Image 1 (cartoon, rainbow, N blue to C red):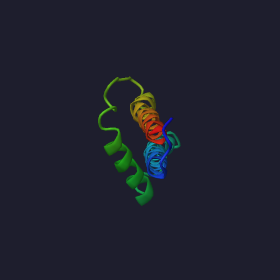
Image 2 (image 1 turned 90 degrees about the horizontal axis):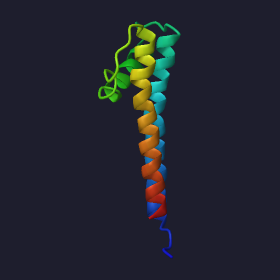
Image 3 (image 1 turned 45 degrees about the horizontal axis):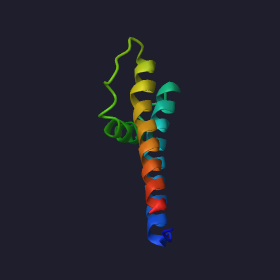
Length: 96
């Protein structure tokens, strides 16, 4: 049986935290969009730009007639992927 090393456990925690932060930014944008936040606000603009960059790869996977569905699904896929992949990688690092 392999002894767990402190480094791999710390690396796993760091990866999980990064994945959580990335997903949080995307989910924050989805909520701001659904709540019709003021896009002239600097914070709203920053969150939108960051979420758009993070979800560039997933936003147009599917197209919908309703804008809100496009935002929820397009950005939501990225949020779920970051959480799933990030936590899977964190678990793998913790087991090493």
